[in-house]
Image 1 (cartoon, rainbow, N blue to C red):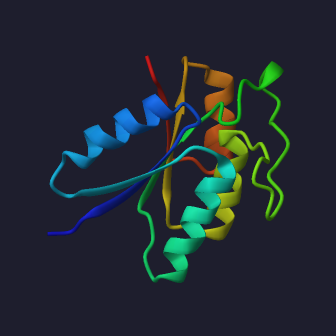
Image 2: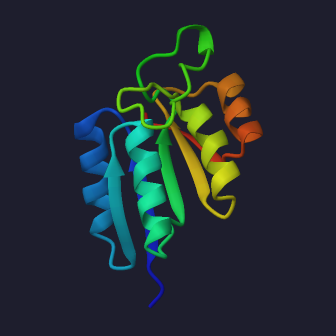
Amino acid sequence: MVRIRVLVVDDHRIFAESLAAALAAEPDVDVSAAGSGPAALRCLERAAAEGRRFDVLLVDADLGGKVPGGRPAVPVQAGDEDGLVDGIALVTGVRTAQPQVRIVVLAEKDDPARAALALQAGASGWVAKD
């Protein structure tokens, strides 16, 4: 049986853990969770170094907090534990480093303009959490 490796990236711990638990209940899904952009990047790098790769990332569009006016948060810097990176900026970084990963951006509400930005950044899809 082929297993699908999923990484949930959301700074709201209860949501991330709940989604990860629901996905982990599926027999063919291995799931991990990360609570920030830097944590997600470390998880991706560690998996790649071990010869494993994630198949799907589920990324919060507002990772790192609300992004006023839809502007991206400050991109994470290498080694910056507290660096902010919004979900769309994370999509761009992951798409560049690991183009085979499918990325679905999760958003608090439907926002066609931000959905278009996410898709332009390389996301495979956009899903409103509600």
